[in-house]
Image (cartoon, rainbow, N blue to C red; front, side, top):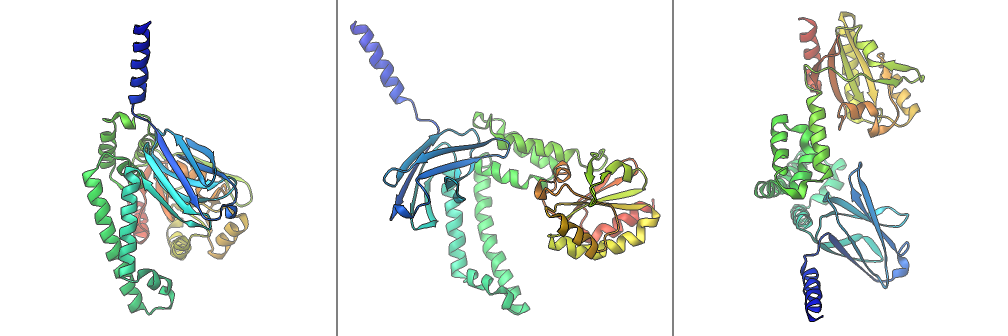
Length: 369
């Protein structure tokens, strides 16, 4: 019997000595709690493919949310049924969140390795902006002379340069970290493929990233980008024109020597600014075998049609009116507009993301071959 008691005690001690896993978010709200929308907080995060959410009820202005994440990333806090009022980086560590019930814009989050660094970056930026009176200058930017605007831009770039140097130093010291992975995910489309693959491979060596959804999705993104390089077959697609009639991409490029897919939207200023030049290019090269198909990231049919008419866009236009969730845009990894991709008569990609000043020359060079 004594032996059994000793075994049970040893087991209990072993259980108690096990390190606590997962995250703990302690929330403390001060002030007049009746000003809060309700007493239920929602902690939400994860990725678009694997979203997660947890709730907790405030009791006397306090609550604790516990869980575990395999994908440390940005999470948000919101009151049930309301918009998020705080965003912070959540990993399997402890956090203390404090704020006054009268001001949801001032929320302090202390804790977490990555969030601690983000807090440092934000504090540095605020310090630099305050020292240079940059917030006030930016608000008055529209009323300044061009010379004064140039000075503001120079100051802004200098401040942001110091912030970037700070983040670059952190990434150099912590190349395989949650902060590094999230930074890599946001810029992977701008990196040479070989560099992106090498950086991603480093995360495969650590068990902590084995089930990380961001790592998985970023690898998928690299594979998608590789499939869109010159020499690859362009993915075919079908979307409706403004009259609701389906238009098939391959039906267009098969009839022309060179076809440009123009990703744009009526709400996109840079797109609309380039359209007059694109109209000139079209008129110059269309009879020589050049065609365009516009894929719009609009969500409003009337505004889309008005943009086409106002800018005199005479080439085929399609859209599913899903804004940034346009299915063709996702198929071609479009993260900004205007953007383009060029294919030959067989649908083979011959150019991608050609800069606006280089578009006319690219078309002329290809058609003269």
